[in-house]
Image (cartoon, rainbow over all chains, first blue to last red; front, side, top):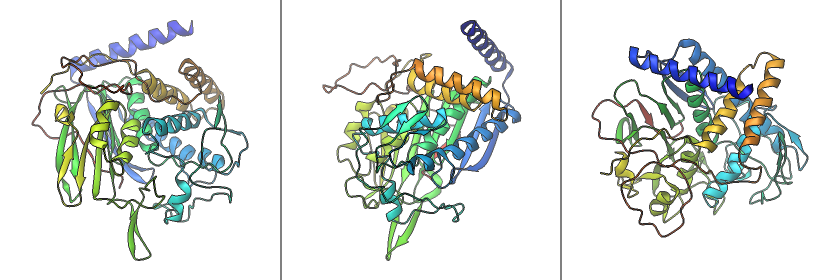
Length: 322
Length: 98
């Protein structure tokens, strides 16, 4: 019975999308603050009510995943000190994705880097400085996540392991919202959260989604542009989320090989991949991995890098999307 | 420039993950609804790969005309299809966390 209901809903959704496509689907957009950044959502064949629901969903994800909130799932996990912790199913999926991403990137994305991020000076929320990440004395880095147990919605992190959803959370949130829009009957959607862009379905005009890559030195300008029919683009930058520490400018990207803020000639890394979550984690490797541009295509992704001196470089397959 | 044919690919892991998350957030206000949705999300999660940590694994591939030259075993990630050049205004911008 459940399967036939799902089929009926799927057929209905497909019919709605087909009808809206023929009629010239309305496009609605919204911009809102979330997860310490600004999100932009465009829904083709959508409604304001649909946007409201997406915003509520994003806020719900934030309430579960923010390390700055005392009662979030992530904060509870981080203070569990080896004890089993029941979390929302969404958080269980997030943690699963975090660990998978660490494997995918050969550790260049590390969800356990939080103790070092705090040591570099990023303990308080930039949006509300009264919200401060608190970790137990047992928190440490580097740390082995091998003993992590995920049994349904119960997660047991090995003692010492703490997690930060930064570096993957916005990407996954963009994926969730974009898929949700289609599920609710939209014909297409673009969700951008903190530079992570996920697109699905039909764009408002033409047959491709056109995504600009911001020039890190001139914010109002694009340094490159890609054309996609599906997938995502994510960009990480050493210029955003920076602060002074001991007279030196540091940023939120921590070098997983040194445990210190990234010092590199790379300013931004942009990655095209199958999803925003995957694209986002792959960008981290662009700041440390010497063979990054030849490695990225082996993951089925493409990359574009901007250096401090203004020069750029790209993977061999980047041109296939531009 | 290679031209890829856009297929109606299903990206099981990422889409199912997102779908499970979508099912999970519906009915936030009603406790009974949230429980039902959590069960649905749980069912969706159980339908996927096991709880051991897998690398993101797509199940669909874009049709490519080019021959693969890679010798290394590539992680199986679906490539976004290639599309033709466009000269119109961008729909969005990727810029790094603000």
